[in-house]
Image (cartoon, rainbow, N blue to C red; front, side, top):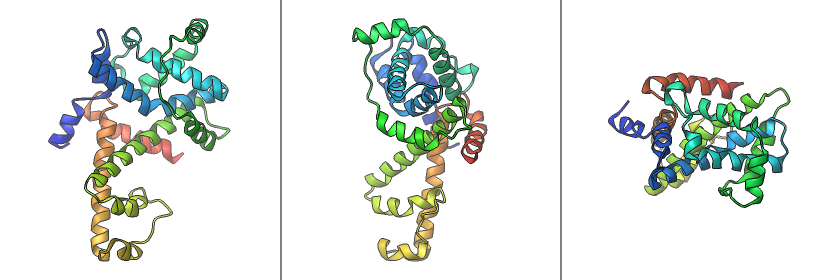
Length: 241
């Protein structure tokens, strides 16, 4: 792992959670809210697969993350117990088994903070993946993996956009994950005004940087650098099913 990656690892999701416990400093709270906006899709998919209607799943997902933002709730977070995804899955599972009467009362009283989630997109993703044989846990794991991959892709896209290389990224993005829709390198030469060898080299750099960013994203969800490879292998297995 490079020095840059090690500095990135110093600010993991666990460190953000732990910083938000207790007095909940403003910066730590804002960072935690950002985590909620990233990782709500697997939670929503899990709730839906547990048998809740779309509207109820939206309410429960909102309620869960509002409780996650509660410092008392975060006292249960222990990075030594495993990976952040495991903590989140166990937490939402426990949450669904608690008494809902208080939460419903709070919601009616307007005491629950509303977070900005695109539930329409979340429902479309759920419907496209909710095969009959999949358990709630399997749905959660797959959506978690896809969320990580999408986040890494978005971060890389932003890097290329900042360097005014967005056309290059858009042309080569399908090659990043060997998408079936990818255009052969030879056919991209005219669009990119590059030789075929140059296009191949650009694609190689794109793939290498993507893998680096993905590993960094995974690093922020585990408790130790040593867990990155194992977590990556597990996520690839999930996506291959």
